[in-house]
Structures are given as structure tokens and as C-alpha cells.
Length: 228
Image (tube, rainbow, N blue to C red):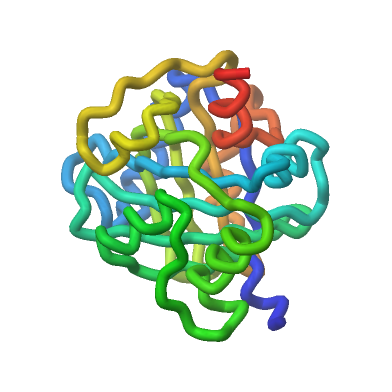
């Protein structure tokens, strides 16, 4: 597979105060993400899947250099756009395979049924189907948060500030807009810096802050651990 498809994804612990200060710096220089409908950003709601032995969770907890995550993602509680995603991580680099699916396909996957897919490892539906058939892949937890994002075309840079991270085990409520949430333990905000080959120096300077600490933070892990 073409290594250039793998993007750097660095994560940092970020207090809400620091988050808003950095947003003020970036807002005058970078464009807001196209998903944004208001100045406050947008809501991301993801339904994460795992197999019968929780391999995805265990790989994340152990810090494995190579791991996969399977999820269905919607925005602002709308089913107008439903993303099926398989996220592959190799060290600090990430490859995300994405495909749009219908609401019926979403319901089928939530109930452990395979959907139409091309015979390609690049099709996330094929990867979902393979895990459903061989390892009993099933939905495990809903992860939701508010996101403010900025983009910069050179380097394919994307900077996201995620806050109010919360979890739910009410799987059947996914997509209904009526999900009861619980707060996980620990950090409730995270800064993510994503880019291809390089991060422009001026962006790196804008993000410089003595309080930022790089982390292996995983929203999926902390939301699963909320119920264990």
C-alpha cells in the first residue's frame, strides 16, 4: 500500500482555557472546517465496533503500534451523511478508509448483518463484513463530542479541538438524537494535529504553548473504560 496515504496524527492534552486561546490564534489565519454550521463548530457522534474478544480495545490499551478501529460516524445528529470508517494506525501515522452508507446499511451493520461491498481491502464495508463473519464484530459504545476544526491546504493540515467528550451504551439510540450520555473519567478535551508530509512552521509556532503535552489519548478507550 502507498505509504503516502498514511497521515501523521499527533494528540495533545489540552485544557479548555488553552483550547480557546489557541482557537483565537488560528481563527485569523486558517479556514474553518467545511462541516461547521456555526462559529462554535459541530457535533461528532460515532458508534464504535469491536470483536468478541475486544481486540481493538486491547490493542489500544496496550499501545500496540499497529491497530484498527471500526466505526460509523454522523454529524450534528443528522442521518443525511453516514460515514462508514476503518481507521488503521501504524505508529504515529494513520490511514482512514471512508465510505458513505445508507441508513438501512447502518442498521444492518448494527445488527450484525453484512452489507454490499466491493472485493477490496480498501473498501471499509468489505473490512466490516470480514470482521462480522470471522470475529463477531458488533457495536460496543457511542462516543460524542463537540469539534472545532481548522484546515490548511499545503500539507493537507487539519487541526481539531474536541471538547465535552461523552459516552453511551444505548446502542439502539444511535442516530435518533435521543441518546443519554455519561461522562468518562479523566481529560475531557483533546487537541489533534493531522498532516501528510509536513506541518508548516508558522502553524507549529501558532500552536506552541508550554502547557501542551503529547498524549496517546483514545476517545474509544476512555469511553469503553467508563463502563468497565
